[in-house]
Length: 78
Image (cartoon, rainbow, N blue to C red; front, side):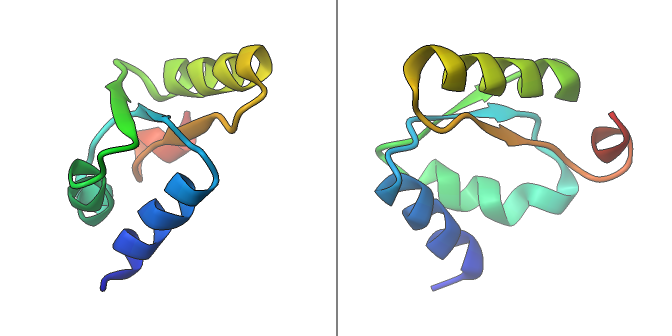
């Protein structure tokens, strides 16, 4: 089992249903593990800041964990 598989399983155990974000080279292992999840859906966004706002708003409105996924470079800067 890869660390990314374990991370996705931990998010599933916490009741995470959505991850908001953008795929990138640095998070491909995580995205591959996420692809096999039947409980978590990836919501693609056009900008990392938008993903963060979506995750924050989702968390506030539902009381569940809002999860944001970004990548290195511009993603980390934004």
